[in-house]
Amino acid sequence: MAAEDQVAREGFAAVPGGNVWYRIVGDGDAIPLLTLHGGPGAEHGYLEPLAGIADERPVVFFDQLGCGRSDRPDDPSLWRMERFVAEIDALREALGLDRVHLLGHSWGGWLAVEYLLSAPRGVESLVLASTSASIPQFVAEAERLKDALPPDVRDTLRRFEAAGDFTHPAYLAAVDVFYHHFLCRLDPWPEEFAESVGGLADNQVYATMNGPNEFIVTGNLKDWDRIDRLGEIRVPTLITVGRYDELTPACAATLRDGIAGSRMVVFEQSAHLSHQEETDAYLGTLRGFLRRVEGRG
Image 1 (spheres, helix red, strand yellow):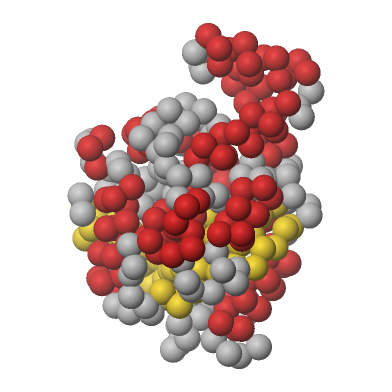
Image 2 (image 1 turned 90 degrees about the vertical axis):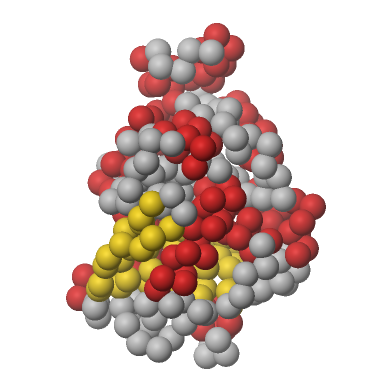
């Protein structure tokens, strides 16, 4: 059954700071997959290909507070990791999600790691997609990726970053080259992903927590690092990453090495969006993992 033919229901749930919009695709008694989108400050739409497994289980999408269809309070004090962790608990309680598989992509992966370290009940497994355990490691890897770009692009990035000028047209053009190498290699970009990325520049959540772009992290996440605590995560864990990912295979390997028994899968034709760049292969990997966790394959 195609994803668009699946049963879907949507609504709003109260969380600390406001109300978030959610959409549940699929039905049945299987353990739901709860998804955490990237950003911070993007929206869920680019994760919609994951509804391809809704023939087996409900898939829960939601726009985190401050983005998408959810409330957008003008209050920078809300944009901190601890509140987003509490948001997950509030959403689960509102929707009766006593048991879940949890998937976090990019920033959603950082959030998923932090959430697991809060020792929540009922998380049956974890999927960490194109993410890391450390912002400093990610930033260091992004610097390495810049060096792999054409020299004129690399030098333009370095020059304007040294000057602190992140809005000059020449700089933005160079950033776009980075993005098409290491964020998404599809041409054109999927519409829902282009919309998510395009809205980040003016998003208060992104500016407060991250910074001016994907690889310049000046917000309150800049020192976040949980490498030393990865051993506390004891649920079955799948780590996925694109070969050309801005959150590189080296970042994924750190997660694999820190989480006992975890499995790492590299998608060879993908950058940061393996679930869109190699959808069939990604969904097959995800299905297989969740079935094995539940003893069904």
